[in-house]
Amino acid sequence: MASWTDAASRDELARCRLLEVEAGGAALLLSDIAGMAYATAAVCPHHAAWLSQGGVDGDRVDCPCHQGQFHVPTGRRTRGPECPDLRTYPVRVRDGRVWVDVG
Image 1 (cartoon, helix red, strand yellow):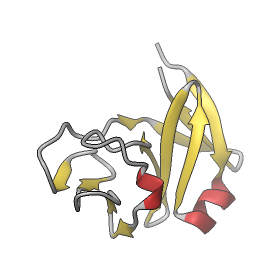
Image 2 (tube, helix red, strand yellow; image 1 turned 90 degrees about the vertical axis):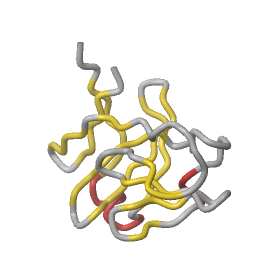
Image 3 (cartoon, one colour; image 1 turned 90 degrees about the horizontal axis):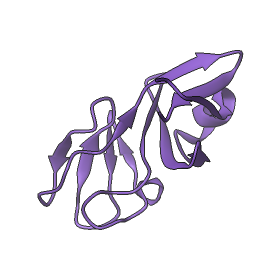
Image 4 (spheres, one colour; image 1 turned 60 degrees about the horizontal axis):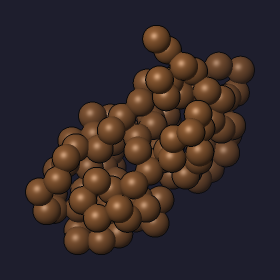
């Protein structure tokens, strides 16, 4: 069952490119990749580092610890130590707001 939650302003996300938010009880990292909005878990599954403190390299987010890197659209680990993939969440943009299904 979908549980859509208003997570942020689309304009704010476009300005920041990476935006850490809490929505629906989940810590999320919103990312703007080539004009598309994405939502993933905000914390690296390897060492619990906050990904908002890393950087964006194309469509990948870098973990600030251990050179981990994840493909934002799919959550797949592309570099770094063995760990689970990053959880991703469905996103939709309506009326200038980013909505995330945290269900």
